[in-house]
Length: 285
Ligand SMILES: Nc1ncnc2c1ncn2[C@@H]1O[C@H](COP(=O)(O)OP(=O)(O)O)[C@@H](O)[C@H]1O
Ligand SMILES: [Mg+2]
Image 1 (cartoon, rainbow, N blue to C red):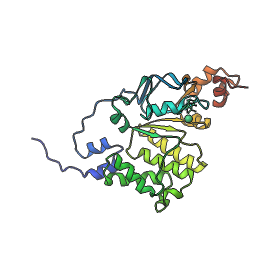
Image 2: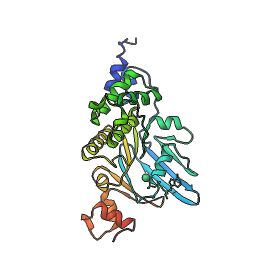
Image 3: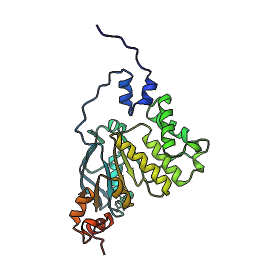
Image 4: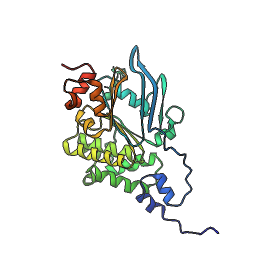
């Protein structure tokens, strides 16, 4: 005989659980889920993209396991932004494929985008909204119930030290505050794979710390972070693995120690990531 248990309040479950699926499970719903244990967070295969005659992404392959903090480094114009825009479904590749947690961005874009956050390097915000209104608006686009969106919005705004600015219009926000709000918007649907294009550029030390702490907290939950950065120290201190992109290809990949070995720089074991980066990209003095 099946015991009848009172079903927990779904909104309380939503506040307790790290994801929508978990919340639904706690609330007693029968959530059908494929076992994605060994599916890569991100799998890019043979990606090619030109602009006119110029090749921006040149047969790029990249596999990032779930739960990894991965940094993409490369000189200006290396193809990082183009790659990430293809991953996010904003730009089409000529060849190759992108899968996010097994969902193909070209053939299953809705499923892929559901598990993906993308923070572009030039995020667009609506100046006439206040931060909570903006986050509720984005949550609405995802079909998230206001009762689920509100506590998430508050948590994100507190993490990013924007909670004291909830009465202000976004148009009065500084560049750093806008960037943090855009990040909160990218995370409001609680995606497992976070793709961020230069998320720390232009942030002051305090804001950069808040963003780094938020991303690290996500990785501790088992989420995956892939970011580009010009700040090599960020890659050095936060990333478990690093890929170096040059002329649309990955020319080196690994942990900092593995990259040091690959570069065989004069600095040896004490080489900084900057030494390694300049050596591998051929820009060393
Ligand atoms: N919309 C575009 N139209 C024409 N060329 C572009 C466009 N976007 C990028 N490119 C070119 O593609 C190459 C890679 O650019 P990008 O992906 O932005 O590099 P990164 O982000 O690594 O600096 C560059 O040569 C850039 O000029
Ligand atoms: Mg770029």
